[in-house]
Picture 1 (cartoon, helix red, strand yellow):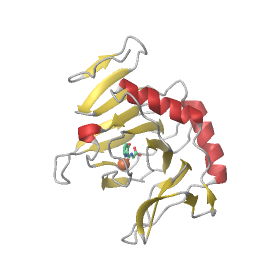
Picture 2: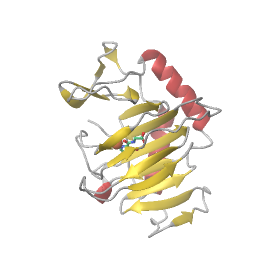
Picture 3: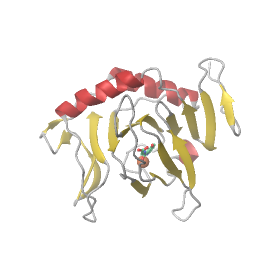
Length: 221
Ligand code: MD6
Ligand code: FE
């Protein structure tokens, strides 16, 4: 049985012990939701990166991103001088991206259900790696074909300050701390909210060293 989304503030779930914080209608932070499986997620990321390595991509405007990225699943999100898009082949290897691990898909479906999205079947996972000072500018995720599906985001390693804006780029931005094992789900009326990540503070995490890793699971195709 699914519990209704909490109206405001943090609510503890009797079923899982994970707490839910509503960021906006359609957007929920599930504190610690992936904490118990975090080490196995980090190990899976290392296997994926051994096949499709992390790389710093170039924006259409010609800037090299400070965040290093790779993907797994049927398609991967990329950017280069030609634009932002999903590609079935990794341009760095000329081969398909590594498969989406079933535990990624299962975690995303459970998190989405907790946030009120009954059925979520992701086909792609963008993996972001931040080193100290790396950041992600304010943006919207709008390259997916079906914007009725939510996005599920898993934070691993060093903590980050997530920037949560509004539907207009000019809207006020809230700062939300995301820690190892936190999961954010958003969709519906929040699907096209502007968001980003502030420059990463240096630190040392037992599972990821001097990095933060973020998984975003999407329905891309
Ligand atoms: C990050 N996340 O947390 C960047 N996008 O490293 C995102 O850009 C993002 O967390 C769409 C949905 C959830 C996200
Ligand atoms: Fe995003």
